[in-house]
Image (cartoon, rainbow, N blue to C red; front, side, top):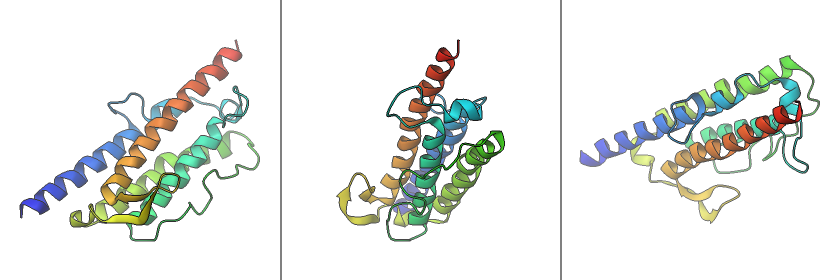
Length: 173
């Protein structure tokens, strides 16, 4: 009984941490929704730092890993995201495409991972994802570690996005 209560409490905490990493009120600072608010397609496609990813590329990367995390939480074997680790954005062709990319991250992938985590029986939070530890592929961790890792991934790249947007806007002055 106590293990079930602890598992359910941990699952709820992980869901809250993930939700906050996407939507706000995160301890680490601005969430993804906050750092992307008001960013234009032109700003998102800009490359203010040579050899660095653009905001748009980061958004596609974040969404692909959120969907992969949802897939794993639903019991699928770990793999690279279907779209790839760094999905090719194709053409950065305007506000409509940018809005779709943001929606894919902030709504579709967010909902997919939160729904998958809510379906996971709390007793499976300690199950391993994959066999061996592979940092790049995110294996060798528990299901709880996978969910916590996605929140950390969101925070890490959210900070990058914030800095890139500031760099673009400073360069536009």
